[in-house]
Amino acid sequence: MRRTLALCALVVLALPAQAFGHASIQASSPSSRERLDRPPREVTVRFDQSVKVFPYGIRVYDVKGHQRAYGWRTLDQGRVISARVRPLEKGPYTVRWQALSADGHAVSGVFTFGVGVAAPPPSDAFGAVGPTTTEDVVRWLLFVSLALLIGGLGFRLLVLDGPLPSRLEGRFTVVTLIGAVGALEVGVAAFLLRAQGALQLPFALFLYGDLSPFAYDTRFGMAFVAMTLLLALVIALVFLAWLTERRVLLWPAFGLSIALASGLSLSGHSAVDRGASTWSQLADWAHLVAACLWAGGLAMLLVVFLSAPELRRRSFIGFARLAPVLIAVLIAAGTYLTVLRLTSLDDLWTTGYGQVLLVKLALVVAALAWGGVHHFVVEPRLDRPGLLARLPRSLAGEAAVGMAVLLLAAVLVNAAPPVAPADATETAARVQAAP
Amino acid sequence: MTVLAVIPPSEHVHWWFATGVLLLGLCLLARAVVGPEVWDRRPWRRYLWPGLTFALGMLMFPVMVLFTSSTLHMLAHGVWAQVMLLAGAASLGVAAGKLKHPAWNLAVPFALFVSGLSFLIHEQNPWLYSRSSFGHHMAGVVLLIGGLFPLALAWRPRWTPAAVGYALVFVVIAIVLFADRDVAPIFGHLDPDAGAPHR
Image (cartoon, rainbow over all chains, first blue to last red):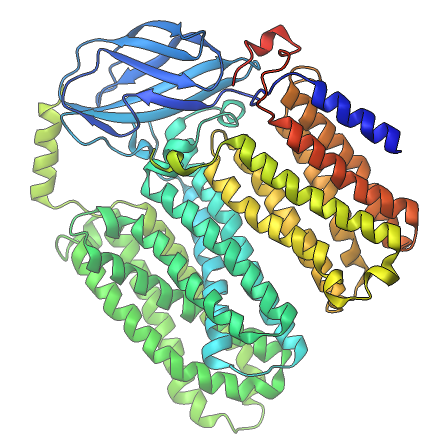
């Protein structure tokens, strides 16, 4: 065995110097999202190994979709591909590149630059498609996962603090980990869907698509990086809390979970649309966290009702005390964001965004009424025989409405809010002025 | 791309993980040589290799999100991160006596099989195309076959040849990782299509 091992090691070590599998982009000129004062005469992309350039291997598009590159060639022993560019006017431009890697795979990518103007993020490159129904569903799954994670941890620490029966502790850990792992997986899917929307490549080519500009140069990419790392940490903390029976570890996990939810606020409408400010991002974050604590808390309450009858009363009363605070935050932040995003009241029924918002508000009112019945009607009568045993169905119904609210929130996050008439005029003027 | 400035070279990352995997293999080899009874005499030693696997899984997450030169690489790193975390967590749970169902012992062979498949799927060139393709194929095959050792140990925990084989899987993987990204300018690529040697 040892002789074989030594032989294998020698064979591996004697093989030729490294190849990175396929070529990776090292730099480009202009660089991704660079703002230039003068139009470039040439666009170049440098790789870490030699590549072959395709005809039309570098395409430069203006906002109207006119292709401006010509004269493709390779330089520096095939490590650089370049294309000349016809004279460019002031405006944003999209570069789509493709090269044949030395390993026979076609590698592709996209980046943007601006001449005299700021460059848009690569996700808004020319030819990129907007959020699809699949992205709405994925975003919803992300919200549901975050609700299970944040709501589960919040419920354990704020409602049912203290030692629990081992069976319930185990179920709590499982639900919370499902939320954390789910958020991790769905986050990856959401990132890839957004990148695919911008790269516009068939699946086989997308596998070799360069994701770096999306990971480093876009808000959602940076949110993806931060959220993935924090989620990994949260998973470790929740697991170690269960393994070592040290509940104190759940507090940093809870703090990190709340913090990572800000990634969605920092990369959404509240960060970039009309009226975006630190306050709008804070309001968005508070809105999301309160919704997650409420919907996820309801799910956890249901778990307690189904697995620990002796704790039903305590958990119900505990959650009834927390819920009004969450609802107050939810309504205050939601109202502020609605006022900020809608240009007038009739946007609610004249625009697609407003109509979805209207349905969401109706569902929120239904959920609040349901919660109100639990708080004002059920809670004072908890001592009545058989009442607690009948509650799980009602709780499941309220939680289901909460999940439906999250679905509409996901649709709203991916939709564009209405544009004010002044903004629309300004945009139209910009388009007309563009070449 | 300012983030690129702080990302270490790919070969450094491979070497760090190779060191971690080598330590893992040496722990398992020592356990196989002295026997589980002697190894477990000190309680902390029971948690040594599961804890190391768990830590390696955690450290793979930054690699997943920072090395995004292709979708395939990001997904492969993500798979390795998650299966290492799963294998480490399951082994820690078993070592601590918190996971009692025998099925948890299958987490490690499952992780090895999935890792091996991931190596083979993400390397689409033949064995002798280049140094890294050889390394990827070798790692994939070793992990797929090597997964049989912990599978055997799940049924016969005291079978020494399986324990030794299990440990050697990690030693071989460590060697492959050390060699896979060696930047020494020795030899050339085996296949002319691989282009000029670089770095």
